[in-house]
Length: 273
Image (cartoon, rainbow, N blue to C red; front, side, top):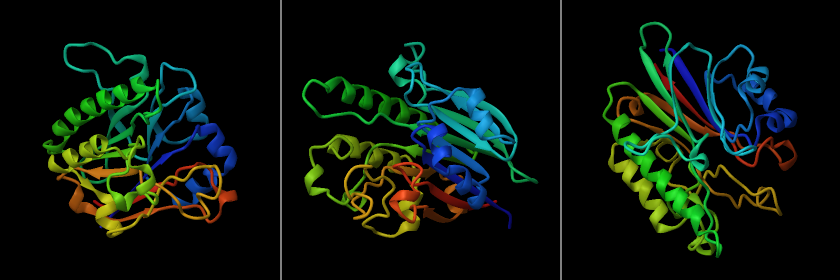
């Protein structure tokens, strides 16, 4: 059976990632679909780095922030950008560059895949920064409403990206020290419970065992990477029409700190068409 390799990664700026060696990873890994977050670049720059790909890019209205894209080796037949909320018009600037959907024509008679790249808000629990958590919860509500629609669609769909939430204790090394930290608050983690209840499968956990880890993010600072003191905040979620087709999921953790091209590692899933 033919296979489709889908990779998601927060690149911390596509220009910086390519300077650090992301191009070599792409050449070696040979993904069919790339779902990238924190792209931070306009379409022209993206196309320079992903020459030969079918690319759908969505930047943020806030300069130097966010930005998501879907890049495919197969034709993209439709694109939907952002998550407008019924009745309230376009997204606020802080929410832009965080959600893009592309319908990809698969080879042969394999039909169409809906591929979504999302970059959820990080948020902060520091005094005076309450608005960042309000924005995070507001966008999680929009995301959950859209996931409810995609879950019941007959078209296979993968929603992937940097969710900025570690779901359980198995998804964060220092869970005891982060019980009151953004990214591990009970109210945030409950959204991932809701996604599972809608029928979405967290492929990283389904194919990665009970944990702890494998983690996908480590701070640039200190010895977090060397000590594997990480968080699993990058996901591939599959709807019921796609989940059974997944054969394996791997986290491409860099061999060493010096070889990292982002503070996130790619999450790579292989699907059987």
